[in-house]
Amino acid sequence: MRPLSSVPSGDPSPEGTGSPGLAGLLRRIARGDEAAFAALYDQTAARVHGLVLRVVRDRAQAEEVTQEAFLQVWRQASRYDENLGSAHSWLLTLAHRRAVDRVRSAESAGRNDTAYHGTTHAPPHDTTAEAAESSLEARRVHAALETLTAAQREALQLAYFGGYTHTEVAAMLELPVGTAKTRIRDGLIRLRDAMGVNQ
Amino acid sequence: MTTQDIHALSGAYAVDALDDIERARFEQHLAVCADCRAEVASLQESAGLLGALTDVAPPPEMRDRLLAGIKEIRPLPPETPSSIEGIGAALHADSSVPSSPSGSAGPRRRGWRLLAAAAAVLAIVGTGTVAVVELTRDDSTQTVSTAERVLSAEDATTVAVELPRGAHARIVRSVSEGKAVLVTSDMPPAPDGKVYELWLQHDDVMVPAGLMPDDSDQTIVLEGDAADASAAGITVEPDGGSEEPTSAPIALFDFSQTT
Image 1 (cartoon, rainbow over the protein chains, first blue to last red):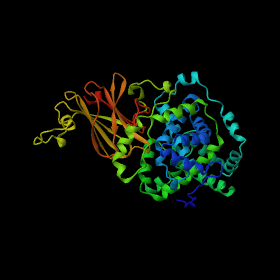
Image 2: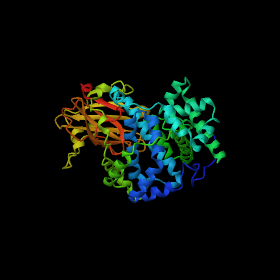
Image 3: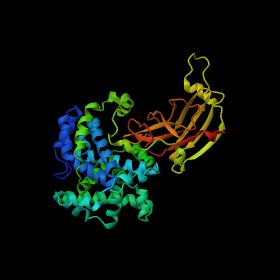
């Protein structure tokens, strides 16, 4: 497999996403500091909720997932290890996992029924995207995404925003199974490298 | 799956694009592969960048709800070598997390007959009445465990299922003992942040029957009265378990299949 260049463990995220303060806040949260939790929430709620909403789509369910994710942050802050990655990444990984689990369990239980959709309406995704579009950070990520091949970008977005498994992505794109997971991985590497260069 | 294959799942893992079984397998691999751990961490950083594209503020009430909610939850201690024993307790502690105040939209408990299609990957093998001779009780022992009593009961019946990737599970039930016992082998650990939860089905209602410890080979007595249960199942649930199944069963044991 292709060797990866190492990522500095301190704060590998670009400025704006990986506020150095987040790790410190998590340390305080682990000791039960409610003010630190409030500060962390204020800094990251839109980021976490926006991602969850994009994956889950249903507004009411997304709010549940976001809320559960933050409760998990409160409970598990002590499990964050800054040697293993940025606090921003830890937080989004945790929230993304919950969002994906929610859409998959809803589907497999056959309960993505009309009850949800009859009462709540997800916003059109373009609206969601537009809200963030103006930020400098979002523009940089967009620019970095442009460095991916169209095939990589498509596979990565279906997996990350769509919450589909690589097997499902392969089927949707009519690819052999092994191809989708490779595209996802290569896309992530290219995205990281492009953002790294821009820093 | 070859080692080469499993390394190649790092990207899909980083964006949660593995199914539950693949995830469990990959996490097993991660535990022993420092290269993959480093790569996954790096790819997760990369994936997290995409979050910048979707910022949407949650409703203001959420902040108040959370700040009230955390007062009732004790943060977990850091993991220390001596706390390994406490993992099970931590899982249970997790159930103290209140479900979302707005969570009334949750699914009704319902029987898994509705989910039979989802579980179709599993071959349900009715093996008829089976005397579990290999685990007969030791008569020299005064106290015979519930598991032993069930496994050696005259009316013990067994339902076995084959799980993907070579795992096996069977449930032995004794109506006279009123209990069911799960016996697993080569079971991959539950995915990180997840736990296997056991269920008994009564009249199409799923009743929690306990959480499975992360051991590949084990014998567990299901909690609750199994005498009139129509089925048992295993689901993958968030840490701490759930009051009702939130996902389709990875294994379904239909007691009517035994006879």
